Image (cartoon, rainbow, N blue to C red; front, side, top):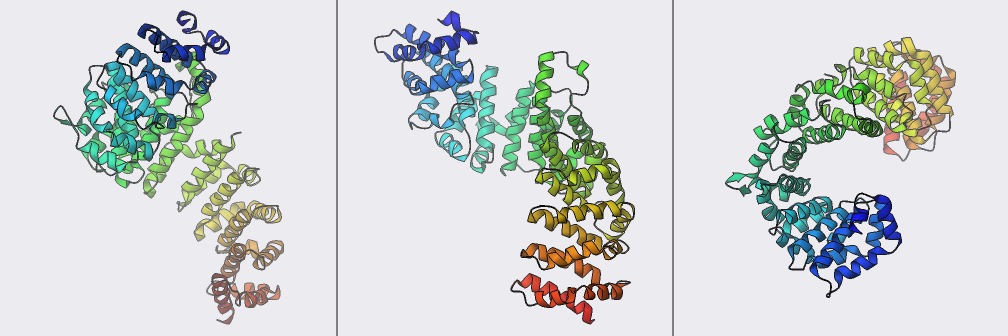
Length: 547
């Protein structure tokens, strides 16, 4: 059986259909079976688990996990290793619920005790722990059973696989966990502190997987408050290592993981964001994430190319996370991640994607970029996006795309000189789009955002005339002042306030025209509103008439 199933998924499926699993489990648990037979049964079950996800489901349905955990109580090391290898394969499958490791409270302490038996027990148990530690409850169970003390010395094991699995364990234990992270900082292994061991493991001569996982451990300890953000192990070691992982020489998965971990590391800290933005042309490297794969010839392995094309969206998502973190706290960096790398064109290109998620991300990034930006950046965005595309996005069927596009328009139309400049060149089309949205079947949020755009236009010096000469729009503002939804009433009020403000040229004519339309009567009515916000705004507007 063993020879038939190794490396042959079809044979594995056939054996499962023929009912081999219950028979193998029976032999595995029989007192009378010899240790050799039990070990062979565990090996065959392990091979069956290596097949498809359906195979693993079949094994789980036959209650394989309790049977294998029972097998760990045997005195025979070879049998224990075979059971652990099979458990490792099953627990690393996405279809296996992690909770199955924690249902019997005696299992974790027993696994801790088995860690000292051989390098195979160490490798498999660490791998099981790192796959089954999901969230604070699991972290606490493992921590309370001495995971840190039991696993720390494995970081200096002669076996690379053991070192690697131990490292992965620490990364999942430390993630968003101050208790574990504070403990790790002070752990000594062979007279050396754990953070120093992690730093050695992220040096350039170490395998990439090891560099990345060590960088994750240090990142998580830093974010949990156990290592300061200005510590040299973060600034001089961890951050540069993660930036290296973003280069196009790295494999797709490495670039995704590198960018996501770096985004997480620098997110709360302006100084780290500043350092990252000037390290190793990071911004230019990120621009490559959107062009991936850039040249087919560079990838000689066709299977790899096929895999990478399917996962290219993960690269873009990772780049967006990192762009967001780089610009999270500092305006100058935000403009610099983005402008130097020619990202405006890239992001505008993304808004034309068939994939709604990419359209949303592209427009979202443009919206953030336009926030409090200088005129030149706004002009760049409008030019690269084109008004045709902007209006296409305003009629997008995806509500998220529409909301983010309105957000972009609102950010473009802020500060007077910018409002007047943009409305002088694109006023007609923008007013058309606003009219269509206010007439259409849209949600309250969409209409509120659109009225806020009108309020911004009304704040312009010359731009407000585009509203005053458009009776259709004025009637719509009047309609929304009397709407049943307070948020829409407030947004319409902002438009009116900006149009009638006294200190501005032409305010008298505008006030007269709006009075003739019955706006003052509505303001009197709203000044009696039970909503204090609405009532205050109406009173303020009426004062403009009295002044």
